[in-house]
Length: 296
Image (cartoon, rainbow, N blue to C red):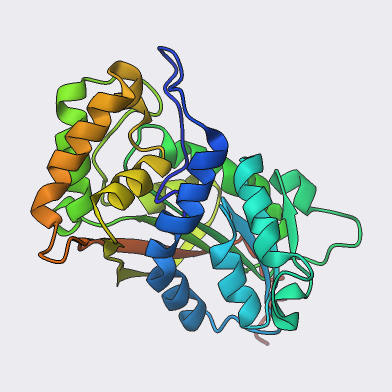
């Protein structure tokens, strides 16, 4: 699932947490990325994604959302700054890895600038499925990404943004607060913050987009066991500030304890969550002025 929830934005102060980028990307791909599939499906159904769609996916992760659109017949281009996640996306989307419907017209690049070209037709849909609303600066960062990407889209094309729902309806938010509370992570861009009601609208306005509808989708986080839950949540990057402020072993222990109330009798972990999406539109040219009709 996508950086669920949010990409790994390291804080500006203190050393970066020691992580294995390859292992983290694999945990994201195998454990966490699928959690947002209900969001992908709801958006694609509402916007009737199909053979006529040319989709540009920002923060595409290891490509699950792109693959879902490709199976609907869309031509997809994914953008992600993580080489490790892009490598996994290539395994899913490039020729000889999936069926013929998924092979058609898939591209994977490292920045929105690479998604443009003199012969590239305008995109008919832009998606940013990495939910914002957990880290300081994520709204502004998404707005900058959208501002760079939306000129590649057709005039009036839909642009989809995603964010965490109300904290009281997101069990995972409560777990993260428990872990991050005692860690006292450094302040600055990339540190934890509560989700705000107008996060998505602010990001859209920052990019010059016009809001045009929204929705909420239930996306429970389900894991086979506590170990999978810990690995999946760590792969989102949301706990990097806590790892930096303390150490990985302490964060693992705190996270395991915080997850125990959500462990079921069969050992699985289940956390109900709600995510919100906003549909915005790229600017359209003004209507031509009508000639003045004077009365006789």
